[in-house]
Image 1 (cartoon, rainbow, N blue to C red):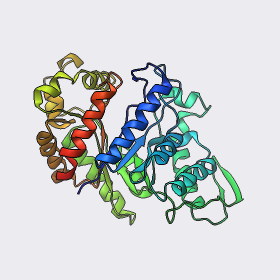
Image 2 (cartoon, one colour; image 1 turned 90 degrees about the horizontal axis):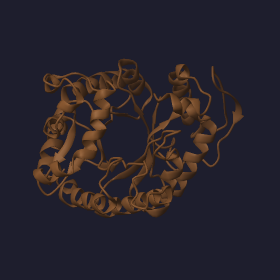
Image 3 (cartoon, rainbow, N blue to C red; image 1 turned 30 degrees about the horizontal axis):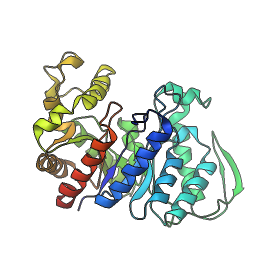
Length: 337
């Protein structure tokens, strides 16, 4: 069965209208995900956001780990350039121990200037700092003392304790959606996170590049398919609640994030985007049966090893419906993958 992870909305959309209420809702979502068969629950990271975007993916992963017993917990993605890798290695190792090996560390280089401004780190350093961070994490999780002298970090005879629960530490997945990022994921990563908003042909091309790089560097390819998802009892029910997802994707389109493809030939502005158009390849959308058909299409196209779904956007749905969507997907889709 293809494992499915859940990627929650960590912007303040709680019914209480406050951050503590949002955190309560996230814990409730995580507990339900475990109950109905999801494989993992993952957090991302941004800083200085007006909507109270939660900036602490490692901490939140630990909180979910304490509330669950089976599902994996982790980051997707943490912004590696913003961390001292020794501190990060320690925190992740503690969570890996506390969860008895359920931690996954997915990392990215970042792209938003406010994230870097908050820590006084230059955007120009993000690639180099990320690669050094991954190097140090792996050395730190051996349980042995090590030294590391590089451009951004000078570490002398340090031994990180406790060691991680998993031999060699948690898996490190890398995001990367340009040739240099795909090369990095293939060379350094235990997995690659596919671009969550591009169409099938684009992702097929990226996946082929990543697989070639992984094999060149002696690594077993591991592909994480990431998608926004709108599930409902019927197609009409999904259309009726699609506007929060449409707002998000219009934002992506207006920001130039979409790679042009055959489905966008008639799209001149974001107003031309329709839910039906996005559902062709950019979303997992529709009834449980339709969601299964779309996931089967992706399985045949890129042979993913893991699926990550975001089912809630900053504009909703409200918690009650979000929980209903999690239950529907867990009970009617996941067992049939």
